[in-house]
Length: 504
Image (cartoon, rainbow, N blue to C red; front, side, top):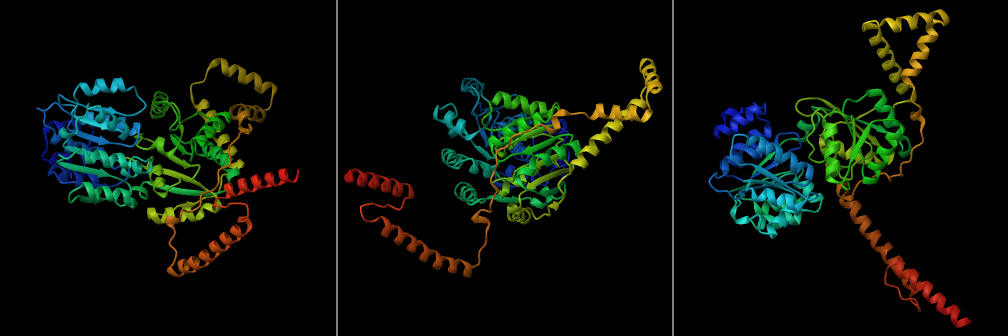
């Protein structure tokens, strides 16, 4: 279905045309008509599927231009996503006399208050800052008719779900509500049950998002082999634009420092960085001034960066759902991408669950060798020499070349040139990365049989009571025991000290 088939304001269609869109994505084709008829919509789809336009068009079509108050709010989990959604909504509002505004934590609240006083009709916000503005009565909930919750599963994982419930309960006059989420945990389902009226559930199969566009691979290796493997992959593939994911902020910082020590041009983002610095790093990456970006899951959520060719999961994510979000950074807008995941032998069970969840196969590949990396570097050096030969010959260089050929053998000269082109003293520099414990599969992903559970319930009950009885027998006399190991040890030391004092 094409956008010009929609019965919406011509100004919206003109803006869509200016943005270069003609054909609707699956989620847009299913969600927009439903929302235009004021029906609640649940959109279960990944990033990169056109969600912003899917909710942006119904929002704008529903705005009362004569009313200068905030009429629609879009709630996002992160600052980056907030600014990007706001930017795209304003692109859709190109031919209107009003605009959208973004408010989020980490920026001077005074500036954001000034923006709200300019009377935007649409507000894109993170939950905490939105609650602040509601408490200050700068945003009046009785005027809001449209609510969009974007990336609800991420809002849940970041602990914002109670704020979302409170915000929705404060907005009784909603014409329609739209909720988008890659996954549907129980708490998110609870929101749809409590606050949405007979919603249309649109589900875009994860298979159509990940398998067709992303070539998924993994390397099985130990923790201390990871960093050398990472450096070799970068040397071999010469990735045009690469994102590397670490599990923690500390890991991201250490990876940035280690890669810089080895001579790579790299930057990173995580939650503790100041907003101004994060924005500068992201802008440099977008403009391809840097080719490698290291990030945590939270910092990278919602980033809309085109042209990412490779995603490397240096660490597996804590949640299986986050794997889909990570690899969704590449293979976007019809282009193909590659994801490479480092997996510890103890994490293979986790990888199997990822494959079940995504309904895809992740291909095993061998860890790159030192020889392969060196060969790739040499091959590029050879190409540089060839390019130099094919370019216009410079007279001065020709004279130097002739002089060298008179003194040395041609092969020796080429060997020397290759050495100069491939020389990098930093490649063997020592680096430090803190050991990260391999992930074990969370209990919620394991499906034990009924017999297995019954057996363990009986044995576990016996063992638990046995250890409890043993502990009480050992410490009951003059050594109070409350079941807490630390308290038990403290009581033991206290009584031992009392006993020694009495002996003196």
